[in-house]
Length: 164
Image (tube, helix red, strand yellow):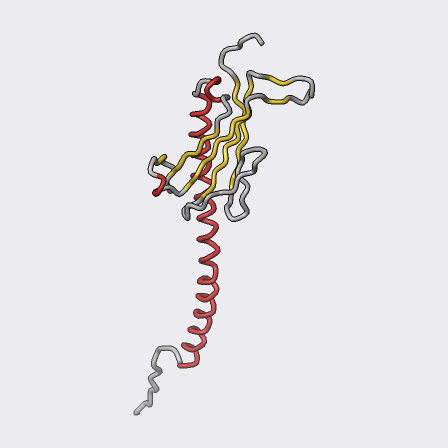
């Protein structure tokens, strides 16, 4: 007795392959569309992290500075590379820092102010294009719409109390 066996070949039909490729292409295009947003968020997170490290270093330096030297009406600019290391050559900087010191600090009681307490404003900007930031003439602080400027105010007191 002769049996006729039909051998069915395993595999996918052309229609199945075409449908699978269409679904894969659609999903791949959606994932590729999310990459620029993810990279932008990553860059912002890195800027915030490095900016915070720079701010901590500058605040530490300000606290270790002699109070009379600090309150001498000084403003200073410092420069840092992309990793947060201070650089002296202004051509290699990515982050620019401005330190504005106010010699006396007003208290909530309008009649009192302390000469042993200084208000320090630390401003940090990611400025790899080396643009010159605009400065507010009344406060001496940066105010420029072209740059993203982070401001960190802090107060520093005299280490030793001296009678007024």
